[in-house]
Length: 279
Image (cartoon, rainbow, N blue to C red; front, side):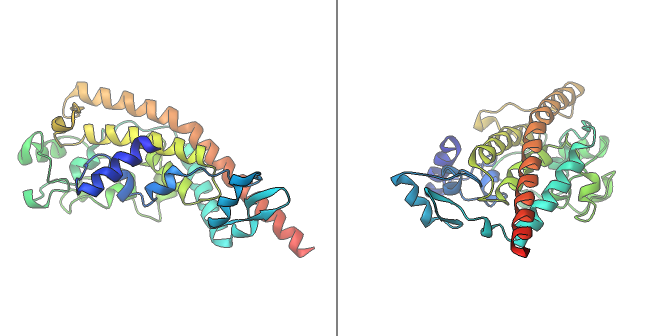
């Protein structure tokens, strides 16, 4: 994880922004220091002198033979989160990937936007404002991800074929969506510390790769960062985007399955605990 966290912390200490990678630490609210620490997940007893350090972390307690996560820390709030995450991920996995959005959500976020209000104002627009607007107006916008759609500019919203809301999230989320696959990281850390760090780290690493495609296909010029564009305004660029999008969907699928399995495991433990208490 230090591959990403250390450069981020160095940039932050110098007050330097990174329009691609900062997203992983600002939109997603998990602390870089938390990413760097290892956690075993539930059902593991840590033995030896080093195990004592875990007693300083929230959720751990002493057990016979060492230190482990306290099952009592998996509260009703955690259970509610696990139930929602399981429902969302199972619904997402049940659908075929849609590969026809071409990353236009980033373009819709700057459509007809004054230059001084563009989200990443430190980067130029590859096609300029007029060229960016023309792409939005000539291609079909098909964004079904609410947390992308809510950042559309007001003039862009009516151009979207879908009208995603928080209430329709379970109905619209699909496994081809870059943001749905990046969000696997969010759903993993929402269950912290009850998801082991290998799974959380795998989700973060995939999110970092997806974020790069997200921005390479955006209207911004990333040349000064050393990244070539995916020119979705051309047929060749759209084909490249769809191929890479499909690859990410295939790689996200086993992570989604692992998260569902972890939710099932946690909820089963919660139910067993409840039965034991009642008896």
